[in-house]
Image (cartoon, rainbow, N blue to C red; front, top):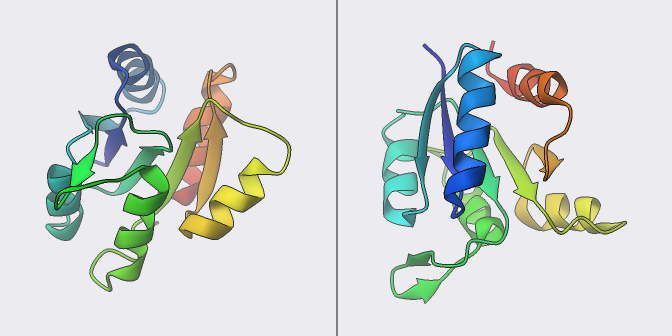
Length: 131
């Protein structure tokens, strides 16, 4: 079973994404905003792809506040987790943000909230999964 880790601080978004991915994508879903847990699950190979909210309001790692960009950078910098596909999710999509966020973070994809095209959302995730 393919597992998607959703890193999201809004319980409603988490529920919506979970529902779309399990019902339409047939995917297993885990959700957390705990950075320690994200790092551990990624390093242990427990997840196949990560949906990363860019603006995590409460996330702290090793005493520092971190956002989704920073967590993605840390995962991409670690040889054990660099291969893991990460899709950034953000509600604050301005023209040009997408390129900036992708370049800054090294993420593999980008989705803006709210997700209107559910099938397109699922397809984007399926496309990035290791075959």
